[in-house]
Length: 164
Image (cartoon, rainbow, N blue to C red; front, side):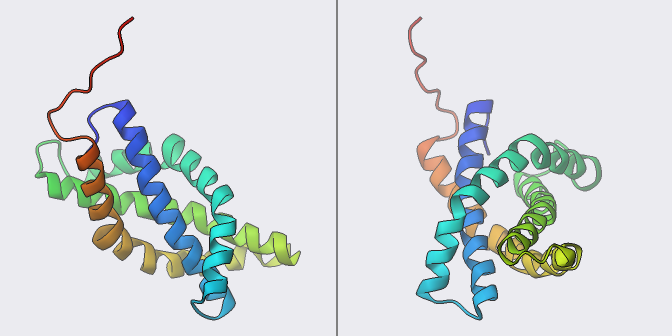
């Protein structure tokens, strides 16, 4: 896990990239009736704006709330690292799924012009996204990003600071 603000930002950039790209392709594939090269291309084309939005939501809103809920109700500071990782990751998924499902519903309404269906589409998107995002986060994205992050930032090493 990140040990300072700089590492936390880098970790968030990596995790958001992985999750938003996967979920963008997943949602476009659902809208297009299945996974194909076209759905991957469309997911990639919509990715940059969704990524910036998700990064802002993650960094400024969801991360603080998720850690607060995790440490208030699910784990204690002295809990094993795995328990803290699972608790925080699960809380992050819940918050991000709620927000990004609304983003996806609004994006769909923007493309179709059918804004009267926004609430219903949002409510449909939440469980559909949750059943993909939680397992993907816990089984694939989380372990992969933590592995890559620790390769770049080994525990206990201090990067040299630039001279002032």
